[in-house]
Length: 293
Image (cartoon, rainbow, N blue to C red; front, side):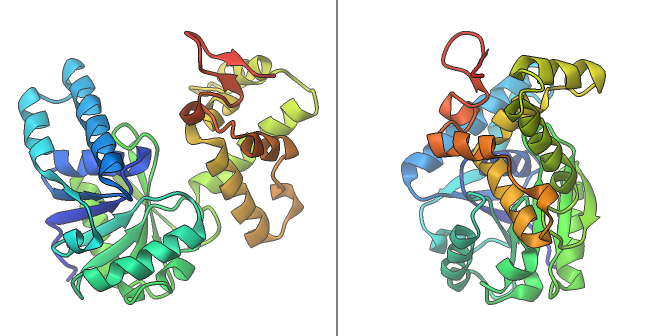
């Protein structure tokens, strides 16, 4: 039997972490939200409040649901404030060194039976588990972005992940009202193993002058019935995250077909990371997104 999850800790109050805290609190779980500073936590809490208010305006939840959920979320200023959690989910930047450092510093503050998960979208679960004192209680729980909207969650077991941890994680996802799918611990798992090479190829198509930003996105929206074009989607994900995942694929699978497009590298080096920096393949600083190439 796995552990009964009542209190969920989230490390990282950014886009993904705030989304995980959002859906967990609406499902009735107590949530402890942690980040590097109180300011970042407060920004995450404000984002959750605003997003829930949007759900209320659309009739997806009631204002009573929103108030009750917000009351379940408390800031965790230190890792010690996560000591009562049954499950702690790391949702920091997609950087293996950063994640490993978090786990090394986090685990001494947790109960011995607490489970630890990572929301990584590409990095080896087995390697990350090795940075903890409990690899058998470590698992990948990869939410899709935006978390409140997307139905799918990938579950990824490391080589040491035990059955109770997997079963508890699967039950947790079901209580969130989401659907889980299981991936083996290969670079980028299922969704990003398929999605990111497509985005990278779209960037190559732009880089080689086959089509403009607008032409490529329009072609895939109308020609393949995608809800948004691949370059628009890259901006939404974050070009730094796209690059990190392609690097994991390229290094992990040693296949030249996963080589990140030089144009993607150039945009990241310029700090043009997409929506979060107001510039990527589109410029978002005005009233309407304008292609940057």
